[in-house]
Image (cartoon, rainbow, N blue to C red; front, side, top):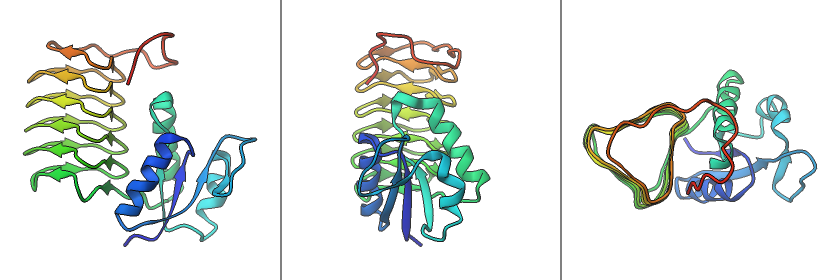
Length: 206
C-alpha cells in the first residue's frame, strides 16, 4: 500500500517523479541531494541512505535521478535493494498499459505513455510522457525513454539504454547496453552498445 516515499535526487526529474507518486497515492516525505545543497524537503544525501532506510520515516524509496547520470541511477537502485527498501512501481492513471504488459520494480510510467501487448519493462526504467512502445517491445533494466519516443513492434532496448525525445525506432531493432540515441533520430538498424562512462561532450540527448 502507498505510504511515505523517499526520492533519491531533488532535480527536475525527481520533482516529476514526485508528482507521479502523488498521483499514484503516495505521500512524498523527502528527497536526497548532493552534499552542500539544502532545501525544506531535503532530508540528507545519498550517503545517508542506510540511515534513512532504517529510520522508520519512509515506507518506500525510489530513484529520482535523471538522464544526466544514467549509471548513477543503476547504482542507487542497487543500493536501495541492498538496503532492503520497498521500491514501488509507479504507473500514472492516464498511462495506457496492456493487460499483458509486465513492469518491473522501481520503474516509472508517466501520463500519456502507451505500452502495448506483451511489452516487458524491466526494473528502474523510465518511460516518459507520450512514449509509445508497441507489441513485444522489451525495455530493459535502467533504460530511459524520453518524451515522445516511439518504439515500433519488437524493439529491444537493452540495460541502461537511453533514447532521446521524439526518436523513432523501427520494428525489430535492438539497442545495445548503455546505447544512446539522439533526440529526433530514426533508428532503422541495430545500435551497438557503448562503453560505460561519462557522456561524450556535445552529444545532443533529449
